Picture 1: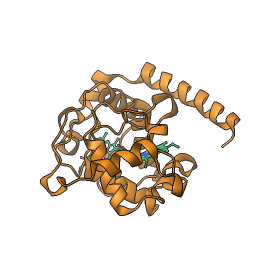
Picture 2: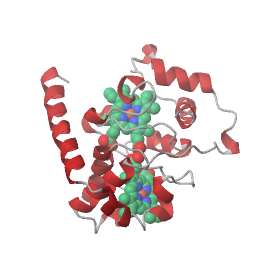
Picture 3: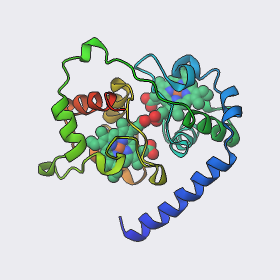
Picture 4: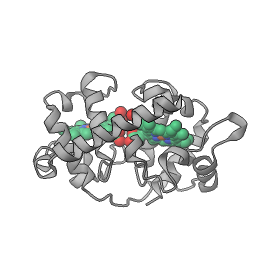
Length: 206
Ligand code: HEC
Ligand code: HEC
């Protein structure tokens, strides 16, 4: 990835972010998320660990995911029908609404209680030089709250089973909507044990 490319993407994302902030109306978004809350919970704080929390996510990331589900570049049998009737304005309002909500902490399921915090933290903060794998922190930030300007999502406090499922999906390429394959390249290098450990480490971060 050349510097020029990074610079241009940065300008484009800044443009998109200012558009989302300017054009997304969180109050209108709240009205449009009544169906969504059946799975994603009140205010985007899903209670069921199979459904992702959306509260506190950066608006441009949420917007991109909704557009990707609509275009088919990201696909899921539960989500795909949910976006069919959404307009661009609906998506911007919804993204603005979830961004304005605060994430709520949830307990790890008891089946995950013997997590290897040290391994998860090491992968997250240092990566693995023996596999030339960048640290997650390099993109998702020291507290895993992401980087809105570069459109790196907030991962802090997300349900571990959802995070692990996404890492597996990037690894087997059933999720391939990451620009320039950034996440697929990382996930390919993770073992199943490392995926579990880093996902559980992330759920504990606030
Ligand atoms: C029947 C349950 C269900 C309903 C209702 C639902 N979703 Fe989802 N949603 C899911 C599932 C399951 C996923 C994870 C998909 C995957 O694994 O790729 C998801 C993922 C998402 C994501 C991606 C999150 C991320 O971190 O990448 C967004 C954004 C989203 N949903 C928004 C919505 C919106 C907006 C609505 C209402 C218009 C909605 N969902 C309704 C089940 C649901
Ligand atoms: C080079 C930058 C980069 C690195 C390094 C990186 N990520 Fe990502 N990650 C991204 C981008 C960009 C996306 C958004 C992809 C998209 O547009 O759907 C993402 C998305 C994700 C998602 C999906 C979030 C969701 O809500 O669905 C997870 C989980 C994730 N990354 C975890 C990790 C972990 C764990 C590591 C370290 C092992 C890591 N990432 C390293 C850039 C990076």
